Length: 328
Ligand code: MN
Image (cartoon, rainbow, N blue to C red; front, side):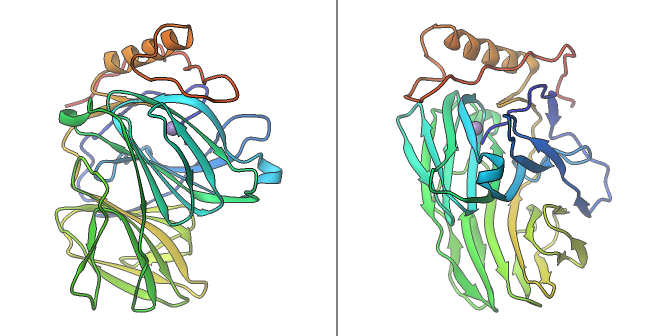
C-alpha cells in the first residue's frame, strides 16, 4: 500500500528514545487512505514516541473491511525509495503491479516483499472478487549502504507450524520454535537483521518464544486482546519490547489471538521519511519527489519506471515548508 495522506509530515526516524521504556503499548491513530469512500487504516509506526522497531518503520493495520462499503484498496502507481514494502493479508486479495514488470496477487499467508532501493513504482488494487479486506502493510528501512540498491520483488508462501496449540508462520528472518530442533526461516532478502512472523493462539493459549536478545520486538495485535510480557495489548495496538530479552511471552484471552511479530536489531542510523520516500536528508527526499513529478510530467522514467495501469499515476503532495534534519 501507500501513504496517500494529502499532507504528510516529514518524519525523522531512528532518534534515541528515552531509556527505561522496556515495555510500552503504542495506540494506533486512524488514517484515511483517501478517495470518496476511503478505507481507514490504524497506524502504530511511526508514532509520536516510537518511530521504529528494528528497521521496521511503518505499520498499518486495516480491516476486516467490507469492500462494498469502503471501496476496498485502490492505490494508483506511486513511487518508493530507500525501503521495502511488506504486504501481509489475513483475508482478501490485492493485485500488485510494478515498474519491474511484476504482476502478482497478494494472498493470505503469502508474503509480497518489494525492495524499492534506488526507486520503483507500483500500484495496489483489491481484486474484484474480494468482499472482505483485512491485513497489514509494513515498511522496512534500508541501511544507507543498501538504500540505493536495485529494486526487486519477491514472494514467499510461509509454512505454518503448529506449536503448543499455536500456529507460527515466519515470513521474514528466522525464529526458533519450542519443541522443534530446526529453526523456522524465510528465504527472502533482508538488508538488516530482521524478523517478521504471524502467530495465532487458541483461546487461553500461551506461547513462549526464544528470541534474539540483540533484537527489539513489536507485537502488532490483530485479534485479541493478548498479553505481551504481561501487558494487555488490544486490537491494532503494538506492544514494544526493548532488546535484551531472550524470551517473549504472548498469552491469549478467551477469544484467542492473532498477532504479527516484528523484530530487528535497533536501527543505528537516522532516516528522513516523507510520503513514500525514505532518505538520509531532506534533500534526498526532495530530489526523489522532484524526479517523480518530472516523470509524471513526461520526462523519461529513468528512476521510477512505467507500467500499464488503467488510470493516472499518483502525484506527490507539496513538500512541507519546514525543513527537517535527521538528529544525531
Ligand atoms: Mn506503496
